[in-house]
Length: 291
Ligand code: ARG
Image 1: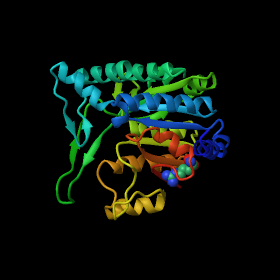
Image 2 (image 1 turned 120 degrees about the horizontal axis):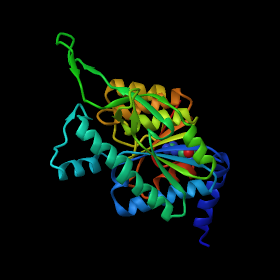
Image 3 (image 1 turned 90 degrees about the horizontal axis):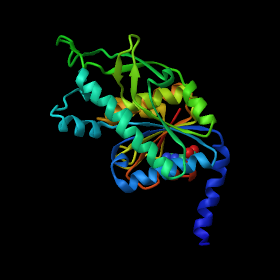
Image 4 (image 1 turned 90 degrees about the vertical axis):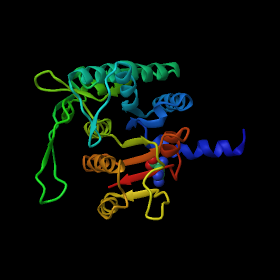
């Protein structure tokens, strides 16, 4: 064998040992969920994790897929402050697309690689309880606050991880669609980054991996920061070095760390086998956020 390949395999040994039995929650989304090659790579990576003794749990998104179906049905997707305006007909489509089409496609792809994936939505086994999200937005102090009602968009109130534990212990790989149920049996559309963070805490996961379309957190000069602690990252948000779509992710990452998750790597899902490179090499591939 090429000595390089052997070196790489050997580099992974201490991590395989260290990660034995560890729960790894992966937020799956973005380009990696669209590109055929990347989809297959993802399914392989997750299957490999399971077979080397880790316990992968996947939470997926599906915004672009929802938009496609809505458009095909003649409903034009609407957003307020990055949140989908989710009226009842839209919620029906969200639930069908996320819990049906998208979830089952991921399950099938992993099963094709020899993994045993099981698809769940937050409704199964009472996994995710949610309530309606209320947003009060105030641009400046002298303007009156604006109350935003995005409809059936929810926030997570409780996670009951028993169904995940049960499946994982029996050798299955749980694949979770970010849909939750409310107290009165209503259905809520949930942010997948948020669900991943809450599920990671509830499962006492060792890692919460955010698969994104960027390399990770970039410093003031634009270079990738390999490792960063919670305090520094908070400062960067305050100073505006971190902005835009990265901010909510960072908030959820910090919440996960506060809840006991050891590390939250933010990695680029456009890079082939990014998950394996992050977990099983010394230097990783993205930005790891630590306590
Ligand atoms: N593979 C090791 C781990 O997961 C180290 C990863 C380091 N990653 C980084 N982005 N600096 O713990």
